[in-house]
Length: 357
Image 1 (spheres, rainbow, N blue to C red):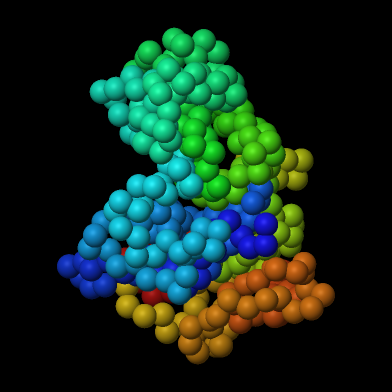
Image 2: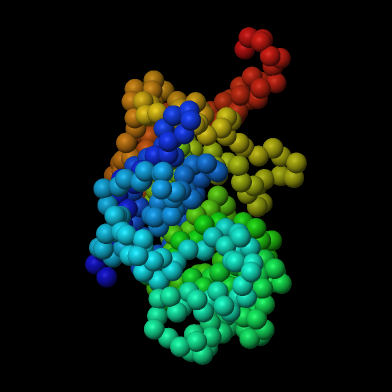
């Protein structure tokens, strides 16, 4: 295949509110190739899920979505009618939602819901549709598929419901699957099973996968490339191994500092953290959005909006890019900057109201 399965350029979302125009997604660029897993990571509220919903045209009508280009295998998705969208969703692009209990209809049996999806997009008899559903349930590791098809969602465990969501996503052999926090509500053992299942299915089918998560452990185990989002923007992107081993953006570095490292983090040792909260995404950006939470901030950070740029030659692998004014070779970043910054933030938080720092 010559081009990417999914190509997104300049995606932006604007939502009118009583306090002003909310801009939760600002100029996002993404690509997903066939057989590739792109992980989108970041804190809650950074725009990950809204990006996926905007791509699929699932945002409320009062939300304004603009983009230079949103294309699935060179076919534009912008301006599709409701009828045209019904031919795309579930057929060419499938989505696995975070909570399968709310994604599945509690009033219908599993079999009825799966058959409806298949017959919506394929000219197939009910008996053949049921056979296809049972085959997919076996493929995702569900035993006794006849029994499961006859059950309601509340009669199944969380792990089984999530496997059924994956089977439903595969029914029409889509070109792209968007998985929004598919393992968040599951225990660690079931998480590992679901991730191995997604990886195996992707190897067998060559489907492009866009994985939305805040769990960098999940990212390390399954992703080929990573896009780190903050304040509605992609602030760093590159090969998974490169970004996790050598983060260049201070925000990515802060996220990794908050994760315990097996064999290195001692019991009882305080983990790193990023002081402050994600700023409210209203108005226009006149400076770096991470300025107030960054230990390396310099005057240039407030001089204007910061563009996403490729790393300097020799500073990282091809395709590694970041949204930061600091040199990509890591120079000018004091080794103890995070410790001093978080200590100062903790001191301010502990001071009595009205006292001077």
